[in-house]
Image 1 (cartoon, rainbow, N blue to C red):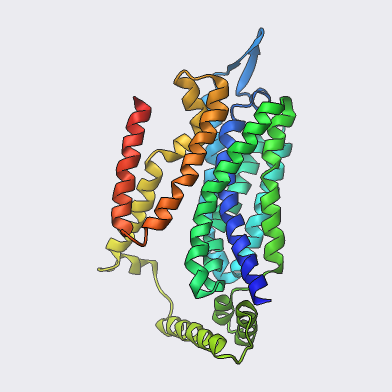
Image 2: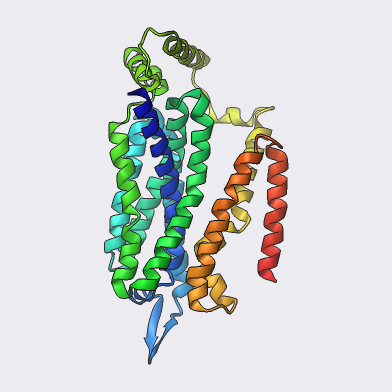
Length: 352
């Protein structure tokens, strides 16, 4: 039974990352679908051709940014939710929000419903982006914990690739409303799988200990490790969790101002800046607007919305493997410097 639960944790970690990537990868090509553009005012018919409307850039920007706005809100409340109701219920709520948001986007006929669906889906993704890795770290065995968290990151890029391939197939075979509604609706499937998985997965033992539910925590830990509650392996890990929690309780409540203390504020600054500049590299613009960028460069609509988008997503996915292999061999700093230089070079080539 323990191995069964650990397999489910692995699948849940994969689905959590896959959802985020799939949502990122899906919208770029949907924005280029004619049926989608005609309904939401991005395109209009002019004689025998379809052209972009004057409001296309503004509406396109809002369609992408509303999802990110939801992500910000979801991530902002994740700390409170994961501590109060637990990691498991937080993932459950995140999955449910994603399913609801995906359904709203799929069935939308007016721009307001589409925006609302994007916000709701973003809220679910933002919540799960914090809750899923935390749940993995607190339930997976020590020897597989790092690999499962790496799988989560890998599946983000895999989700982008699969979304691009699915959309490419849809663009090649379908037209009209069915084209974009099917593309939007497909994202509900992995969210529903994660929703079903988390229903049968247990609470995090560490969260149960924090809530003074020690007996339940010991039972769950034994199930996860496929060993009796009185076995040495279970008891040793349980005592470690208890000791860490007792130390946190002894330290008492903490203040946000402690992040500004000497010795801490520099770490906070570096961590914040790394996340900020990671987003400022421009990769999000390419992921969200690749088809538009390639079209504006003079390439054909087919190459821009199908071939180049899939190739870009495939390179993004493949490039994750060297990073996973090198991170423990050459260190984080050298890897980030090398990656930053390569990204800068690639952006220069795009501009040329």
